[in-house]
Length: 365
Image 1 (cartoon, helix red, strand yellow):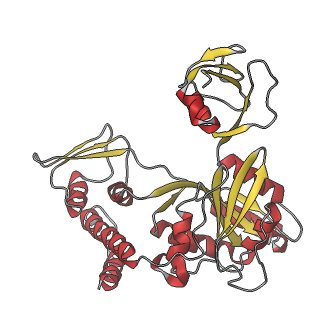
Image 2 (image 1 turned 90 degrees about the vertical axis):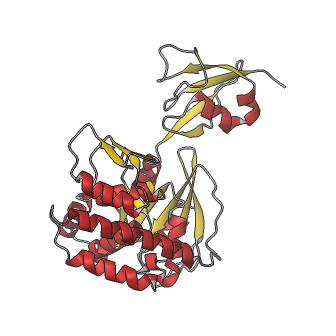
């Protein structure tokens, strides 16, 4: 059985000392483990009743936590949702959506059923819950203040095992399959992994001839992530809920330990209302929005902004207005931070910035 093979390989990895001599062996084991897990996930499937929620608004945020971490009450406190809440486990049994309206943006926030340890292996409908997490633009990890550090480590493990890579970017490794000449590895720096280890991992994925170009260093797991090709890289931060029950010293310890792993922390309390406005601001900022205002040629600036992602262009703005605007586009006049002078004439590839005012000129139909 696949499960038994996975268990055996996991045990062998745990019992193998990590050093340069064992690097190649560990690489092969981890590659085999990744392929077996992928095969198991594909085979498992499962019903998604109650978990299929259409995307809406400008972005999707998911609240992830263990039962009784206070996600439902938190959702009700910052959105228009009426998620059932209580002081007992398993209150939420389906995904409950809410909408946060903030600085002109409409942000869909999903309260997921409480995750159990072992969710990535299917415990407690875990795979269905975690499949929703993979659709998120932002993950908010909600922790119970009394168990914050233990819950944090467990949730990170569950999310990692379903392919979530939080607050990380994919490594710049480019792999091109070839038909001859074996495996060639090129990098502008000395790599931590030996060419032999890299080649062994590639061969586990059936690549006996390939050109590998690495623009930065990487470890075994990061190479496997590139080979699997289905990892989700997404921003995340942590909410420590029920913070009114923590002392100042306890807060400092939690903040220090979680920050060390690259996550920002917001302390909240639905009881005292502490941190709720900070939470809204943190959600908005992590989604990397900009507000752009449109203006008719002979009219006033629209008070309601268009919400776009940082780095968006005039072309993205036209798509957001209507496909006919893009199809019949002539030029745009921009006033704001992205141009050198007011009403500067620009084309479709011009990048916009926060607060820009744009007049789009196009042929009317």
